[in-house]
Amino acid sequence: MNRRGDSLKNQLVTEKWQPPFHFAQGRLYADRGYYDLALLEFELARKIAVRSASSQGILAAISDAINDATKVLTLPGPEYLVLRRAEELDAEQIHHAHMKSINEICSRDHSEEEIKVWGGRKFDPNFRIPAINEQFYVVVECEGQIEGFCQLKTNDMPSEGSALLSGLYITPKILNQKVGAYLLNLVFSYCRYLDIHEVTLRSSFTAFEFYKKHGFSQSGEMVTTIREGVGIRGFPMVWKG
Image (cartoon, rainbow, N blue to C red; front, side, top):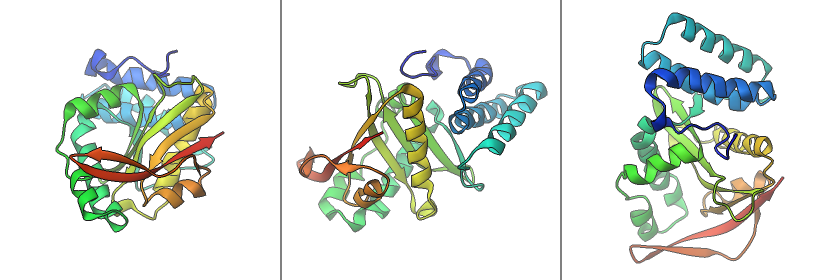
């Protein structure tokens, strides 16, 4: 199994075969006791199976697998939300949730100039879709709309035992409902699955205390990323598991 762990890339698998593919990936996770990761795959399998009018047998098998995984989870996710692996078709909704989070949540702690260039970006499928296919990418759906996501990069890292949390954002609709904590627990679970012991990230001012609460520590001085001539400030952080 490669670094995607789970991975034929979505675009290489026809829609017809995606439900059994993700179902099989979920089974691999479940067989090793990673029921939270299995559920992400099963939920994506169900979404695609419904959309592609898969057979009742496939739909029933997926539903049974979801029920079985949910029963044994020690930390079940919020019942009113669906957490699943991302697919290419999610790209634009992910972008809008990302920008909404920056503009409506991070704006409390960052300057107007920062928010304008950071949260004013246009949708670029060439930026979003490769990450969906190549990274551990999870979305949070509420009433059929994506309201949060996280993405963990494990390939091309300096150390085989490290990963980069390149994004974790939620919209105001699901804020203060422990969704961020659940997403982080999925990240940690995936790291255990791949035997990764270090996760790095660059935190916004807004998320800094959240990450500290969940085991990250500041690993350097404040850094500034220049975008369109404006510096966007943040803190490097690291988690060691």
